[in-house]
Amino acid sequence: MILTALTAFFSPFATVLSRSTVSRASVLFRSRILALVLVCGSAQAQTVVTPVTGDTSVVVRRGQSLLGIAASLLEASDHQTISELAVAMRSLNELQSDRLMPGQVLQIPLRQLSDTPELPRIVDPRPARGIYATAAAAGSPRMMTLADSLVAAGGNTIVFDIKDREGDLSYISSAPLALQTQVASLASIRRPAALVDQLHKRGLHVVGRLSCFYDERLAEVRPDLAPRLSNGQPWESGWLDPSSTEAQAYLLDIVDEMVAFGVDEVQLDYIRFPTETSADTVVFGFANTLARHTVITDFVRRVRDQLAGTGVLLAADVFGVAAWGRSADRDRTGQHLPDLLPLLDVACPMLYPSHFFGNFLGMQNPVDYPYYLVFEGVRRIVPLAKAHSVAVRPWIQSFPYRIPDFDQAYVAEQMQGAADAGANGYMLWHPASRYDVGLPAIRQVIDGAVEPGPDRIPQPLGARTEIVNDM
Image (tube, rainbow, N blue to C red; front, side, top):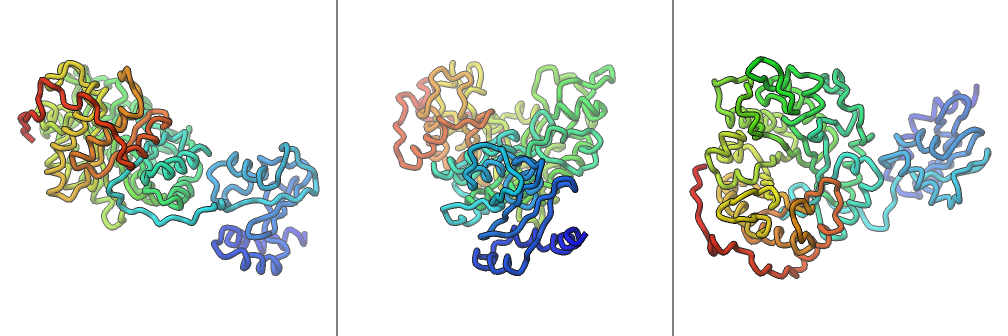
């Protein structure tokens, strides 16, 4: 009873103390004052915690396991996952196995210590040099390894999924529609704010990616939010109707939560209408009263207004062909750059060479010209973007799809094309977040060691071919 009363009294102080950034000397001084500061676990297996040399120690009770202790202390630590904390405990205590003995004293590294000083937070990196991380990667110990590798290569920006194209949320959301539909049931990021904090400590600019109107999970659970076929039935394609006020409100709720996590930038993806041929006869909620680009622009304006005063930047991924400003592409996607750019801080054209098909601009095989496609795409956007002080940061293909000779040079050629055209950096995309080719390419470009490809400019087009741009 006395033990219970003491722990109840001191437990509010324990969390503050163990997570404090005060010096080790200060913590040690306080540890002499507090004999008991926290009890974790069930009544059958209590964990007694006392501060020791700047962190925490645990006296193992009968029936406790390493993972169980890690789980009970995770919320008081700055680790992302139970397994990550357990690995740190195993290393610090030089354990040969996970077997614990009653009465054994374990030191718990609640804080992740680093040999390098905490780097200053980057608010707006220009030029940005970054990579994309899936939700699965972001919610695992691999994320910090990936982040450290990025920093070592000279990178400064990382993008991770908040909501992916399947519609799964990477965190437990309190948004009403998320709760109703359980789209966060597969959430891999248990502590998103702590994740962002750890990335900031590495000096990284942190971007949350929000897939907007392509959402397989929500379209299946709430077919009333999907576009309609001519017979009135929902179009089962994974798309939401971009004009749906409820779908838009759901996305705005998620934006609010992203801001609370501390991200530096909200990046909107799938901020467009479907382009599949089967979508030609689909009926959307706005019928014929609004142009598609008006619907998209109005929603982006709502996000812009939502972020006002937060200091969080707004970016949007745009179709690569949007750079050429052809009215057919604009009318199909709803992405009209002259309308969108004034609302953005960053424009992210997706200029993956593998996504240019057929006889594009006279090129029989566009993937053979990675430098040219990125260079031309960026070059066409930069003047309009500069007029609104918008950064242009293209997505770079760092995956081998449709590229017979994919290698480091192929990635570096795209980066060089972006730089030569006046881009404010670039982001590497790999759908599985594997950058064994991409990260060395970043260092190669930084070091100025890119060797020009033999045929950077397609010969039929000459050194520079102007194409009608009716943006």
